[in-house]
Amino acid sequence: MNRTPVGRFAPTPSGRMHLGNVFAALIAWLSVRSKQGYFLLRMEDLDIQRTSPEFADILREDLRWLGLNWDEETPAQSKRSTVYDRYFSILREKGLLFPCYCTRSQLHGVGAPHASDGTYVYPGTCRNLTSEQIATFNRPPAWRVRVPDRDYEINDLCQGVYKENLLTDCGDFVVRRADEVYVYQLAVTVDDGEFGVTEVVRGQDLLSSSPRQMYLQALFGFSHPTYGHVPMLLAPDGRRLSKRDKDLDLGYLRQHLTPEALIGTLAYSANLIDREIPISARELSGEFSWEKLQKGPIFMTNTLFSGK
Ligand code: GLU
Image 1: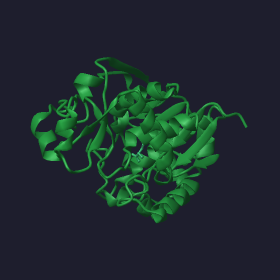
Image 2: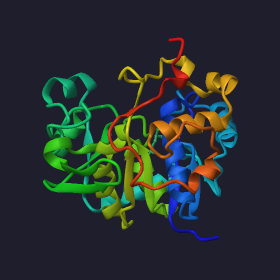
Image 3: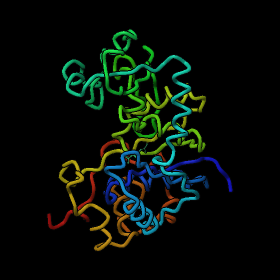
């Protein structure tokens, strides 16, 4: 089998897939399958409190129901902390890590909001602690990686050019928490890099994570993938869809729709087909192109919303 391009779907098994997750999975799959590439599935279960193997099983079953098959499931992130240790050591050897003792309330009190995602720009509080100062804290620190005063730019397949200066828009970021759990940014970079992912397709909400991941990719010696951050789905009246809309999670949708009807309504709303007809993922892969895909927010048709 041709291994290029290599795409992936990397869900967090913390509940039932929502319409937005289904859409991101569909586009990631279509992009790879329309080019006869290789598709990976990976469970992002770093947060063991919120995730469970049962949800992971349901997720696999939901993907099968949708007709979104995968060529390989790579190990779940919760099983890979010794691998992440190695990459953490690379950062340490490069002199880029420092311990941070800031509490959440300290961080929120001083930093400016992140340019794009509303989290806080790290003001550098613990960047230059002396060993004497470190010795005064008797609790385990989080570990942050120093970032350069440099712009990182991506040319996103959906969002166009996105640019961020890592120092002023984000600041040194946490790679391992005080409870020794590695964070998403490090795990995702290592996993995409080690398993040869060439295209990262996911929801728009993760666009602002990409510069951090590109920075880590360069430090770890991985090449940069192409990025496609798929637009947000909106209700026909323009309302943002939320996880609280229980009738838009797959548990509910599966009771009322065939997979072809669901994929058809998503594909039509996103401009991939010109009539709202039931269509399977496999049939749609013949129709897919990034040029056709609607780039701005996607207004869903009334089909899933009638009666609301
Ligand atoms: N696990 C993340 C989520 O479920 C997606 C991460 C990614 O695609 O990079 O939102």
